[in-house]
Image 1 (cartoon, helix red, strand yellow):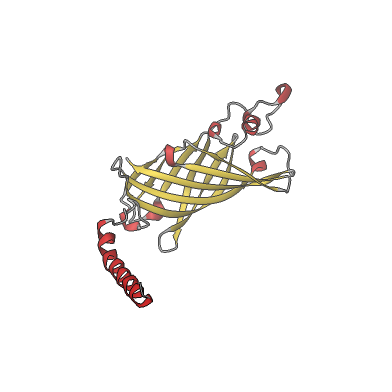
Image 2 (spheres, one colour):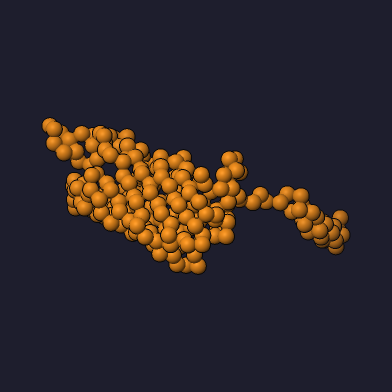
Length: 219
């Protein structure tokens, strides 16, 4: 076959493929996610956490070498919100400390084991009370998609004020349950010594960074 003929065939093949592309795109449209970052989708009411899809991550410096991290789950609580007055929103969430998850089983046992010889445990102990956050103020910014949420965190029997930098991440109907759902992410940090957990400071860092990913379902 002569080179000119081969070139012509390849050109026609390319043109045909390009012409067919829109048809294929129309017939195989990409699915749309049910949630979207659109505050207009949020409706007034009381929402409860979806424990299976709500996580709190933590990370702490270990010996100055690197950060170690893990997660808590099974959070339960409520969000009351009215889009007409978002700064009046209220949050009350409880987090079981016994849900802590880390890669090393040995470390998890250490976090939850009793103190030696009847002494205080190094970290939480075997029957720690859940942590609880109750908001007392919300300041909205960032075109309504970000907020500073202030409140009180109770952990290890002590209560201290904290401020969470929160970000709205999506709203819509859960495709399985058809329940209206709102998603948020948040970040804040604490000094664990403020809550009476001061084992191995400064070898293990005092400051603990916390990252929240929470889904609230309308009740």
